[in-house]
Amino acid sequence: DGEKEETQRARKEWQGKRDVHAALRAFPRWMHAERAMLEGYKRQGKNAHNNAISAIPRNVRLMYVHAYQSYVWNRMASERVKDLGLGSAVEGDLVLVEEVEDAPEVLDAEGNVTADA
Image 1 (tube, rainbow, N blue to C red):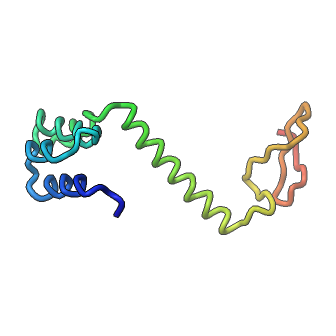
Image 2 (image 1 turned 30 degrees about the vertical axis):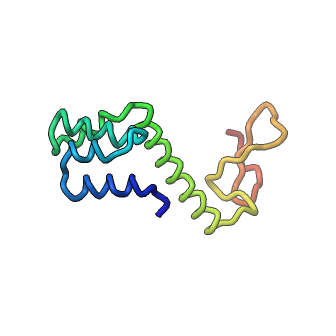
Image 3 (image 1 turned 135 degrees about the horizontal axis):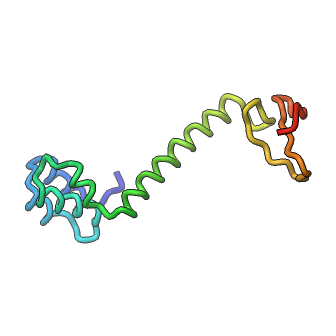
């Protein structure tokens, strides 16, 4: 599945026995997030899931959140294109007009100006 064999072994070690010490020995040093979680379990106990996640550096946790936000955005954008196409704007779309004038325009589903914003 694209994952290194040593990584697969380490994950199986944790999934099978839930032995934090054995898992820490099995996980490669370069797997920082996984090792941080295991260290959190080691300090707080195997059921301290929030503490284990909090042991992951904040910037990495934020990266996970941003990656999931991107995933959701891309799924919704793909569905929108599949359902409505790319040919024209529909009601509710935000449209960037090439020539910017003093007052922004609001367009209806056909692209006609309906009112000033």
